[in-house]
Length: 586
Image 1 (cartoon, rainbow, N blue to C red):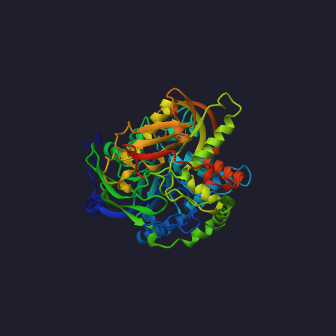
Image 2 (cartoon, helix red, strand yellow):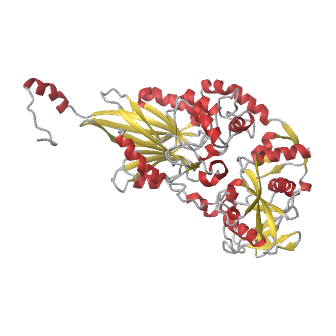
Image 3 (cartoon, rainbow, N blue to C red):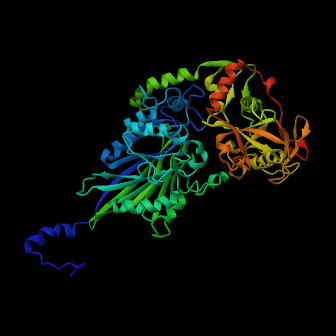
């Protein structure tokens, strides 16, 4: 008996027929899985904020038009049948191109809805699958659904579930067959996982409609299902970093950056395309604790600056495909020309958006630069605060909160933002506020405002009196990104860098008098922060007295149009300073 079945003697002819198969050496084949992530609306190699070809100090290039050229090179080199192309999310938010087709001529329109340029380009390039990113939800679920319908490939999200029954709201995985010249195709399973932080960051868009359980938990559920469904190889496309600090302090029920933990703890994963953190990781090897097998991870730089390539060697042995070799690398999109096919496909939409962002909306008396904003109170940040405060004051004027003083939170989002002297175009204002945040008003006490500022001041390094000041290492402490360093417009205060985190805010005053800890203030605050993004104290649980569904960026554009002239004399003031024992740094 063999496995419970009776043994049957083979005839000489049958034995002879079987002999070549029995004595054949294992057959090896190769294929490559290519991957992008965090494309953020970059269709072509263009910067809509500067209205020029994208340029940075490292001479990077951006956009799907560049990626397309790299992809075609790999397909030509390997053979199209020996390749797959996937993405790890954050596709439809980030540039004025993607904004335009979400808000100005939305893809959700009931009649004559345009095709999203990112869908047009990705379909033309021939993607096989993409995972959802958290920024997919910035414009609401209907926009994600409209985008999904326009794609020729599945948008995957195993941990994006309907709130009512916790059933998948998107396809969890797909299994692709690669016919490599051997009798049985290689079945490559692609699992898509998105970021649990969506529940906090886009609470207004998803609450009560979708829930987002943990990445590791859902990988443990679905990888065995994929293997049972016949997947020889499992590749995870995860909109989640490898080993970044979790959520920069956000109180998530699940880790934000869990790709490393997933690779280490979930058996049978071969490769992970990593996203979300905008880092370049050509290859990271992590040994799975349960199997001892090495998992290969790779994260290409965002915006189409890099293309990850997972190079597989597999062999068909004893009736199954097994991985014999696997490595990852990244290709730089600045080494190739744009694919003219993609440029041509997007030309009309690109031209329309260029005209849109170059509308003149007002004038400015002086040049306003954000360059020094991480360590100085500069007028361009005061402008954000003033516009937010004015908007909330007007909204609350006829309510019971109309007599409370209004403060405003702002952060230096974009270190290259600049509003020029003279004509101000829409793109100048849009470049200052690069996120799709909306505005809310919350009630905080004076004591809570001080706590809020103390928390924010962890952004700075501690420096003794007389110690040298090195600007590159002065900021971004405790892994705090620029967008999580808030100043508060409407109060004045010093940040004493000789003191430890939590004891730095001194001379906090309002209208020339020390802030009363019991006094009530209205804080104009963006929805990301109000929903708990960054885990600032008090604000997420504070009483909400007003909220607006329009982006702060649009509020700013309308404010400039109404004023006509931006004059720093109307709003600029040195509200905060970095000091050491009372002596200003600057």
